[in-house]
Image (cartoon, rainbow, N blue to C red; front, side):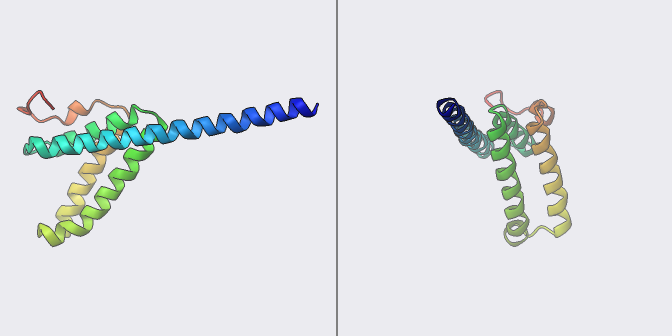
Length: 130
């Protein structure tokens, strides 16, 4: 009986451990997806394309699994919170403009994280490379 109880306990611990490692791997890969979308957005430097890149980064990260969804949400929320502070200082935008843009960014983030097609936000003329 002790052997059986020990085997059950070990299998539960190992199962939880492997799920945790899987979550961390998904989060890491999801963070890389977010970075790739950000890098592509900077490289493309295409007016009106930022919502597409927001949606695409979140979509790609979410495809990794729950860890990717978590990473996409944490990164997206952190970016918007930081931008809320820095934009008025660096770009001179008013608080109304910043809130409006942040809401639109978050809409695109949630769109992508929910598995919807990021091309919904793709502007006409954006090169196929992206």
